[in-house]
View 1 (cartoon, rainbow, N blue to C red):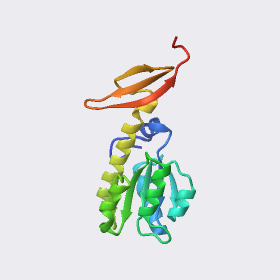
View 2: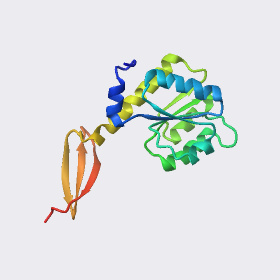
View 3: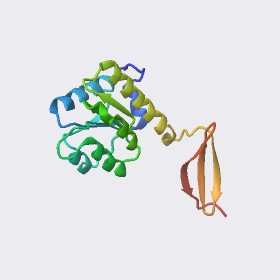
Length: 180
């Protein structure tokens, strides 16, 4: 099955077994609606549902993407996101809320996007599609295809640096037993 961005489920499987998407919203209707939208675009997605921020944090999810409501009882989405970021630095957070006034606070927790309810199908598809592309780019090097890189020996370890047009970042460190 092919989705709107030209991926098949086989492409998604090659990214990293499956994309894990967490949804955290206190409204059961929104949990089901978001799951349906996600499954329509990416049937192979593994979806976890949480009805509160505390449940999300206690669930120890390893989600690639998190759809997070802001206005929830007990612990709001912004506080949940701040605490979640301590555990999960790489997860793409997409806020979904009826409260547009929190949009600037979303930058403080490194949100990927901010969607306002009621959801437009086109906007949801665009944002979720861009998130999937972001994960694809992020995970590209994890499958052994780092592109251009250089290896630097430092003591007993070798560090692999990915080369980019204007930047360089460390991809991995390999402890070497074959260095004299």
